[in-house]
Length: 297
Length: 297
Image 1 (tube, helix red, strand yellow):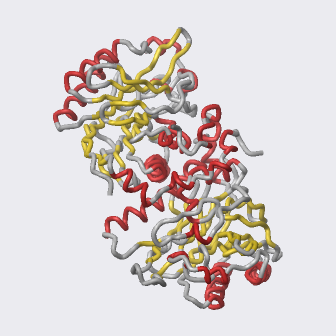
Image 2 (image 1 turned 30 degrees about the vertical axis):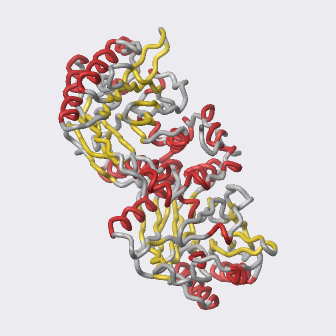
């Protein structure tokens, strides 16, 4: 068996309101809690500095975007340095006037920006009008090197795409990390809601299995009103979780409560699992060419 | 919402022994039971005509292989015609001396061979020495057109590969079908066993979610000794199941019992699910090229 390599990780599942400074404080408090419990890597949820603003299409919202590096990476970098932890945060990036991204950033223990990932798959469905706000990422699927390992950072909608997870694994990612913001419409029947949340968990646990990698997924929690008043808003379903390289659940947060979830991941287990389930060995790359087609018609 | 299109399906989860004729009779009896309950599509488990012979590498085993078409497709074709059902069976194909495949065949309601799929991903790990017996398939990932829909037939080890499921979906498959033979080593601790079986279910439910397609998986059941006596053999874990296009379990067979599992699948639900979760729309095919690499190093 390969050697144990235990990494303690923390996930900050939080409520957000309209006060950006307050939200940043809550995020930073969560990082402190995780660090106090010994976490060396802390994952924040998607767009944790504000409400999930994509429920409507409102051009004034672009005022919230900020450059990277910028004030938030500076504040979070200072915290990472102070606590000696790696932080994965999720920001609304202003790249140029009229050009914005949904971008995850990784802050290193020396306070520097280890790297960034621009969300590649952008959703657009009722209540999640992201195509208005976010230009699809152009940095591809590249893991970010850090002092705690090579991080396969992806964002939310990416979690439905096995291709994204696989490309990260093939590039040497040692774990997959998903800052995310997903929830229910209260009007949906309870069994629909259950199916949706189960599917979301299964999809990500499936990436763990297919790639023999741990998965960390940090989701928003709580109800947020629809600013337009057209719908009853979204109730984000929390359920942040950490899964091991066979998709086994190592820790899971509640559905309706803000928590800092801390657990140990054994990065050494990936190699043990892959030795017995050597999926990478048998990929039929000679027949995968059509994966780059929109449809095989 | 798109229209309902209910298809009743049957899965024959069976024990096998060394008597090929007996095993075929059991398979055919299962098909009759499913048809009597109204199933229009019946899925058999992997290599249902014999014991799972890949626990050792034994050249005399090749005597069991048969041509396709051949005696088994003839018998099963006649049954398909008699009962008016589509049958998906799994055979050890003799293509030429020294060239054998693990091949799924689809028999149409008129008794004809609708098509075949040669297992593309071939495992090889202790107790599953398949690389000795089966040449990797050379027909690619092509759905098979039938009177009950376009079938994405894959086999066992394929079930760990999101690429296979995706390629079938992109080619218009309306459901994914896995004849399979997987089980436990009794010596493994119970929590290892649980993780293995859970991972197997999650992986396939994950393909349902990622592609918005129902998944039918038919597994072998019961203990089979290792002919070499080196190990204690394999206890196949049954658990054949049918999942809907959000990965929701529609029916599941027991872990330790031979059963014919019959349930309804609504093929119309795939379009409803895909309209709200339009994963195919947002695939970043401009960045998927490296999926044809062995590794991105």
